[in-house]
Length: 247
Image (spheres, one colour):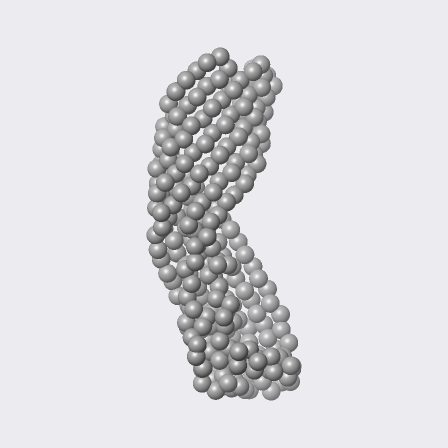
């Protein structure tokens, strides 16, 4: 609280600034399956699925903050806080696929369940570029931003039991003997993943910030922000459109 109050006094004394938050998410995967016939009856078919699955989820959250001392006698700071996570799943999967065919119309419903290991990585990095006559050290770039300090900068790795169920629906219309139009919907769920927003400790001790030390003196406990390795879940929806050709 002492740090928060003092920082508010500094802001009131003539500090202006802005912040920009940039996020990205990349999800991809691959699978190798064997499909075997279970039943056939009229226009209905039932197949079993057995195979291996790999999934990869990478997410980044970067916070850019610029503060400018408009009095001309203080400290100017441009900081970057980066929270990056990656989840890699390796496991076997089992499932089933049911198909219905009537005249030129078809419907396919597939469900799969993958069980295995999720390898997780959390990478927290941050730095600030300081200038201004009141900065106690030589102008330049130093470790630590606003949400990142020596108390939480670094990498952590871990492994968790992973469960990934997926449901797929696909409807088709046989336009000609050689062309089929399809539309589909996918739903995927992934338990026990690390995501960047959950790794931010919002308890910031401003006395650890180099640019604030002229106002506070030496850093005052507690040592926060602290390292986090929080778990959450992830789910994704998808819609697909396709045109199949048969020869």
